[in-house]
Length: 357
Image (cartoon, rainbow, N blue to C red):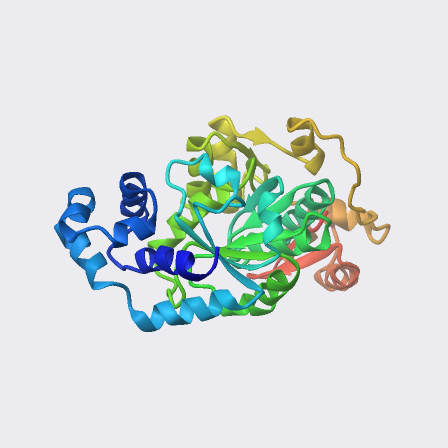
């Protein structure tokens, strides 16, 4: 959609006091934005109330409107409306689809089957590897990977999706003229080139706390299912899982150590009926898709197998490791350094070590 028709949609969509619910009421009553803009203020007030009708009559910020139209004129950008034929069908199934979507990148990805992968911002090295590997394999087997561009699990999911054939979509909680968090700027640029950035928020929107839960409903709404990789009990990822259940999407969770706070959210979901998964093939089978390709797995190292056995898969400190293995601290430290260089072990904050599968 371009020209005068798009401008009419934006003249409504950029009215600060008119939210998505009010916008959809107007569409239901008047049929399209042009008709509502040509109606009397009294007629609009019957639909959305006098205060919002007055705000619509006053119109949006003209500078923001002009800037948005210029932005949409760039061939890399697009403003998609509910009236567009290629508005994603999955979002039409949810209770509150956004009237406007701001897009940057490969817009055709919106028509692909998608799988959301989300989790903790403060992820463990194993969690990050899991997110990246699951995303890569699912992407190579026909799913576009959707996540929220946050640090940790989200970023790893995007990286894995971009490496696969299905690529990745980032749904963000700011305007598309900025990147949040700034540390993911390079990743956002790669998504704009080879994936897709999506927002329901107008240009200039800052990272406000209330926007992130709203963003989460779109992450789950775009997808056939949601995979939670790591999550604390009060994680925002569990909000995404709740939206997924409300929207009739499948919820999957990767189990973890009973000692890890980042496993508790996943374990709680599994207790509530989420499907426990140990490999991407578990998800593919759930959707009746035989795995066409599989990501390569790192060979199990032959270096210091007894030390690896002593480490296990839970974080462990050096003293505990020496007690389990019978090694001196000096000898164990030297072995750990070799294993770190091989990528078999990572050193965590607090002087603990964890094996990476």
